[in-house]
Image (cartoon, rainbow, N blue to C red; front, side, top):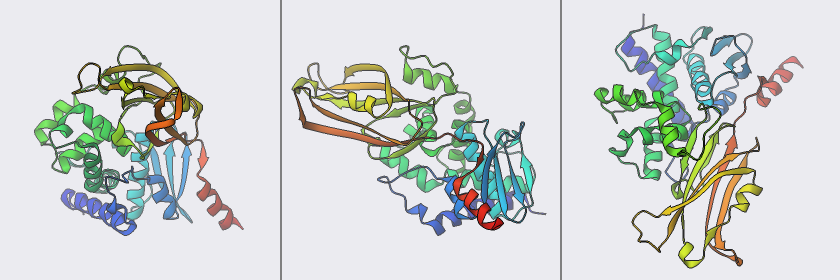
Length: 335
């Protein structure tokens, strides 16, 4: 029987091998993006279906073609981890099985031992979605050093960019040696709702705190992020208002975003009368990929553009049924 240690090693090595084979581990700070687990599943000719699973999170199936089921009733971060866990079962050649909420309550990086197959699949999911090279690339782009990454606010923002939960990333940072095991309990006790409230302030109160709140700056320019329909985006941009240049928010509205708060603050380090920091709190109103783009110009001379800022944004909605590639494979098989 496989030991606990061997199961962790097996899951770690398999995740590293997949990234090496795909070339994804060549990611740099200039082209960083979350691992597209759904594409990885499709690329391996594994059918992926989203369904209401009556309390289950997912399942790995082995019929004429391998298949993965993922619940439609949980957040994107949980769907992604579940899909990665089931992919782990597939690439590790495990038998078919179903998974419930217990995969969220356990960790292969703690002291408790459990089924080695689940340990291997859990480890694979964590190392696949949160590889060290991707964590380093995000930290490099955002200028987060080891001291910054110990802050709950930073861990939360990194978790959004990785497409994972705050808790999953905190535990995985211990595995990577970024955090000490003794630091983990206090970080896990931080209410994520409090982090969201701190970003939104008192001007915006969501109907449901299950939403994510993204803090975006010039360091995120030209990146691609995947968000959920109810997410908020707090965008902080330097504005040369003293020289007459303002960010034109009409472009954001035309692109399908609602501006729910618009504030100006003194830019850090600047004296009164200098540049300000424009703080735009927005949310998407169109459930389709779009470009969050805005220009800084003089209102009386729109052609005089002093700066531009853009982010490629995809709002992820998971509907019932197979993904398009899986449908095509099923039809080809039946022909």
